[in-house]
Length: 370
Image (cartoon, rainbow, N blue to C red; front, side):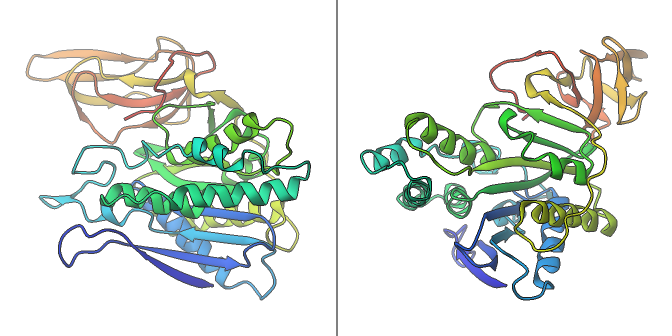
């Protein structure tokens, strides 16, 4: 293992956030895999899984890794520093309120311009030029603001990777994954190994999150040069490892083993790939994912547990305004799997309460939650 530290712009005099980047294997010897945890800094399960994965890789015998694996176990030191009255707030940047996993730059224009007139009929040569152009396009950006510099640094590490796993979690949730429709089969070994209960797909979910900032530029380059072959790359997913409180060692160990098994299936690790368990779900469109709105203000009681297949208009909870003596039912907008919910039990009208993976499109435009 080789560790590299990247300093980001100062948050204050004497306060410099740093990224710790762990390199395994040899660059250029095979597929490049990028894994990061904790982009939303208040989501510990991803960081813990990345840490366990790094321990497992470090313990492998020499030569066991046939490609390159890069792990950033703590992807957001800025968000980790954000505490208000003792409460950690790591999902949004406190300086502007932006979600740390939104608004990543689109460098496809610069990459396409750099490749004009340089491509051939040879896949390997074209792919080398593409990877170099991707790295150069990110390196050419020089933001001085810490959050934008963080985004640049993370993209610079991942943008030329073959496979990208961005490890997150929801508030309270079953394991699930977000990716593009064309990547569902690619990720099938992983989704089966991780026990995914929902796979939510969209060509573009809106607001350019980290994984789409990587996969979209690869897709746009292929579309711009249809007569020139490129290797597959930029195959990216956002992986949701249950809920924020699910930090038991058994969970992080299981998640690390799922990633190791996936890397073995990809041929990045030598050895016999583990048998794949039966799939626990089929992919559904992200546009069909219902974001449950609170119909009233008060104390929330759920009537059904996570993992319930609900029907349309089913009462799945109620909100009680004890001062007024009223009870307002919370109903399912669609039929599907109730797979994620908020930790809040005192809620405001209009607040997002949970998610149901439905099959028919319900929404368009910005498909991700806040």
